[in-house]
Image 1 (spheres, rainbow, N blue to C red):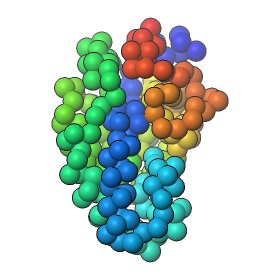
Image 2 (image 1 turned 60 degrees about the vertical axis):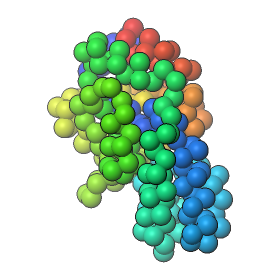
Image 3 (image 1 turned 135 degrees about the horizontal axis):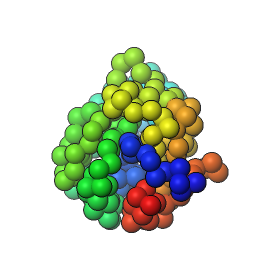
Length: 210
């Protein structure tokens, strides 16, 4: 399997749970939703669905009728503490090394564009493509955003790998016909069909550059 990764030209990353350790940020934002809107759904139920588009999560939680209001409150509360939300230790150095090796990097996330920009502005690397939810494209676990990212970079699926941490990431990669690498420091369980499971950013870097 390692030899298959050597020629990858494009490395796409999920954001939350892979680069950004945002669980506390999300928990605080969901607490604001519960307090301000009287939502009774516990945080653990919300957290189990992350990786999907926010409206899809709301529908799965029985909150479709209030999705836009919940999202507005959640985004506002989340944005207020994003500047102190930590990256996973070693991620920034890993990304810098990958860029220095000539690899093209991209982000494919279900986080909205405004908050994604706040996060990426704190990283000392350039991403060739950043794909956030947009009209006309289905969110993960559909493959649309991964396919769009590859099209924007003019790179084939065989030359691309996606790094994620949730079932929705693995399924999106599977449906896009690209290799999937799982990070064990993230928030989801390791799927059986990932080509590699990284235990730390340095471990992931070694694999991607081997």
